[in-house]
Length: 287
Image (cartoon, rainbow, N blue to C red; front, top):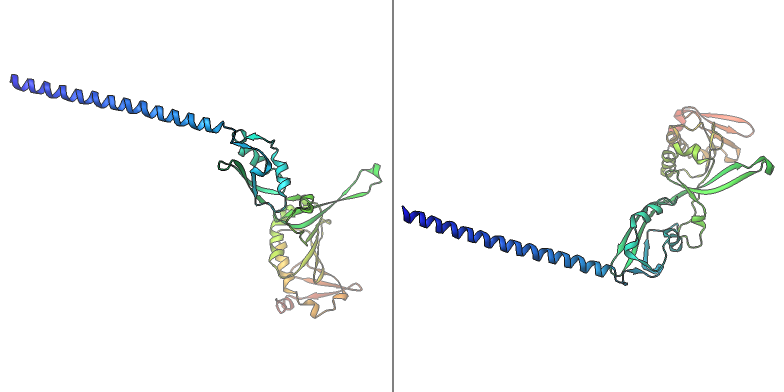
């Protein structure tokens, strides 16, 4: 029995010795890991504060995705001074500032380490129509009407005209013209423009000035659509169905096409004669 107790104590002592050795090894490893991480962090910090990580000139900023705005115009929106430490720049704030510009839908800004620089990626709004707004000036100025020109995209967002007319702009002016206040037609614009862009009928001007009568200038002549409503896309489809109307009537004799009621289309003739077009006739004139 004494021999068994002696052996058990020897085994336990050996196990304790091994555990102490393992703890020592883990402790030493932890120290080395701490030293390595600290050294790495210190090295990165040392590298970061070196003068090479500096934006020296606007050429260190790479800009892509811009068509409306020139590189110089985007540079002016960044509000950066040179030279400037790359690490003091806050890309998120710059991107948020750029997105506040009416012509910019999305912006991404990131640092570039090799070579040191800044990368700016833009997604601009595409203008689809020239917008014209007439505003009455103060009575002290003889009540004259001031015409404000701009651009709008497919969602009805206003884009300042100067962004397009810049000498360095890479975008051509759209041919479609819209007259009226954007606040008035914005609720209908997205679906209405989609219907116009998909139809084979050419529309050159949209007049929203009269809230009770939307007027289009088309290849068929003037078209009266009445009070704007959600049925505008359907009215455009009906209009496309009578595209062959000039082959049946002399365009010079047509004053306007009345499409206020798509179920009962009228052609107002000169002088002041109207000719109804039945549903059956419309079906026979599909494009």
